[in-house]
Image 1 (cartoon, rainbow, N blue to C red):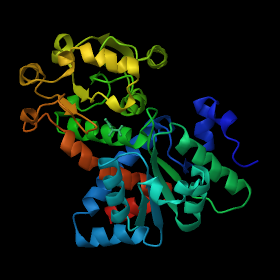
Image 2: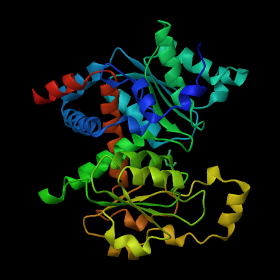
Image 3: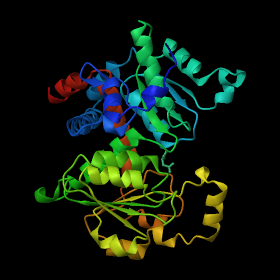
Image 4: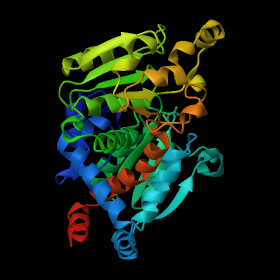
Length: 364
Ligand code: ASP
């Protein structure tokens, strides 16, 4: 039966991962745990090739020809700047034409159409749906809907998750990993590995879907130490489930109540803003009294960081990174945002089976 998603949402991730792939590649990109190390590294290499090809007119023309016969729907009903624009730019690089719905009150949802009906309608006109919603499981359900339509021999298309509630943001995790990798590539040969380093996550750890997605990709590497720097307040701190999961994956997990004690150890500092849009009444009372200064990066703390460290932030930022830090070479967040365009183009290429064509053209 169509629209019967509940049981599938409750399954172990390993079963979901199988369901979301087809013919040796991802059919839908919903969770960061769908990426194993081999695929992640291949996507980073593809992103570098796309970036390289984009530097010449011939390369740009080749890329734009690859999916010129395809159309993408960007269904972003939750606010977005970077994810939306970088996906749009990625589609344009690969030749896909794009349409968007950002305000559901301008679509038939306003007339009471269900989101699932809307998404199925999109699949009548488009070849790819990239979506962001405040509903954590919506992208996952839409992927199952497409799989069910396939079983019924009906038209179905890939779904890419551009951010699901407080749950997951897998393509942000891809661009974060791509940025980490590109940053370390600048270091001497014996320091380039992603393995064996200290990654600190600071701020609203508990409600950050970007942190939740990124830790799984970092956990694919050996001897990784993760330090979670969050207020000692349950909604914002690392959840005990996540801690257990990460320890089960062999990660050295540490939780601290401020940047000060760990700042000198950090190889990658992943800052996040406090996501006030998720506040409950109790959270508002907590913030009215809380001193969050220990979770902000200052020029003084920066002065104590490793010369080779990298500062990342998914953005938007509030006051956790002052603009005075932006000119420091360790501040990678603007480059990180641009990297999103390349890795998202690589992901689109992967979903449409273009990896070999891109590699062949790059090497020719
Ligand atoms: N842009 C990121 C997200 O969509 C982080 C944030 O909003 O703070 O999750």
